Length: 100
Image 1 (tube, rainbow, N blue to C red):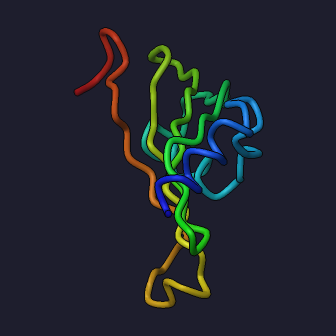
Image 2: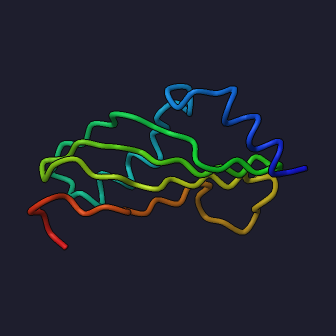
Image 3: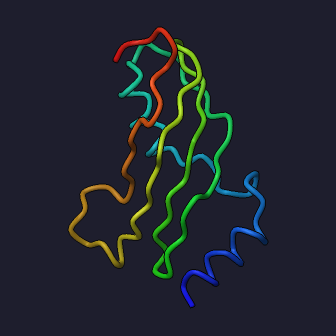
C-alpha cells in the first residue's frame, strides 16, 4: 500500500512541483560549497515520500565550481524529535574540476 501511495504521488506531482527551496538546506549547501561561493538553486525533484511526512529530494544547484547535485532529506520534527535540524544535506555529485 505504501508503494502504491508513493507511486500515485509521484505520478500526480510533476518534478517542478517538488518543493520550494527551503532556506535551511540552502544554508547547509552554501557551507558545503564554501561561504565565498555563490549558490543558486535550479531545480528540485522529489524522489521519495514517506507516510509520516519524511521526504527526499534531489536539488540541482549552480555553484562557483559548476553544477552540483545534492540529496536533501526532510525529517518532520513531530516524528523525529531527537534531530538537531529537520534537514539533512548530502552532495551526491562532485562538480567537474572542483574539489573532491
